Amino acid sequence: MQIRPLYGRVLEGEHGDPVEAGVVDPTKVTRTALQNAASIAGLILTTDATVAEAPKDEKPMQSATPELEY
Figure (spheres, rainbow, N blue to C red):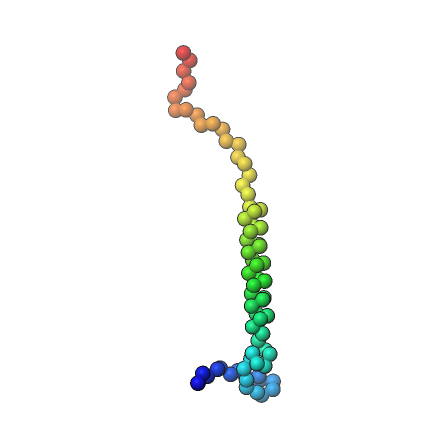
């Protein structure tokens, strides 16, 4: 025998399973979680694409010894 937790509905003074009472809809919860995950994934991809570093003008390195004329 499996005991399922029951929750009360305060306004009606009743006890019952929230899924059977229609308080919790597992399909809607799953769909909403999937939509939120896709939204965040898109945001992360956009952020990676828009963050860029400006090119730097680099001067060539100077040698340790001055150039000698031959």
